[in-house]
Length: 129
Image (cartoon, rainbow, N blue to C red):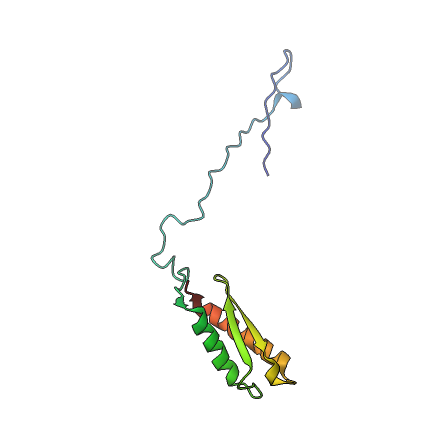
């Protein structure tokens, strides 16, 4: 880093070869601000920055899609299970089990799988209002 040195007025009577008489004055100019955008932008500059438009689905349709995927899991009951999609952005899902199911040994696995399916569908769909 360069420091700017200010010249001090010479007192009268100083000889030119004394060290205090040879003061160097350097002026530091501020650097111009650089733009984050290049001067000649590439035609491909915005490639990869485009956001994909998500398809909109009704909450009932998304719940049916989650329930259909859950039905493919081994040990998933065919009755007494329901999925509710709620919220708009971001939307969530809620998996509930009815009393008719009885003891369910893989309940935690089904809930985790429901969360995975929901995250996958969130990347693809928005909830239509």
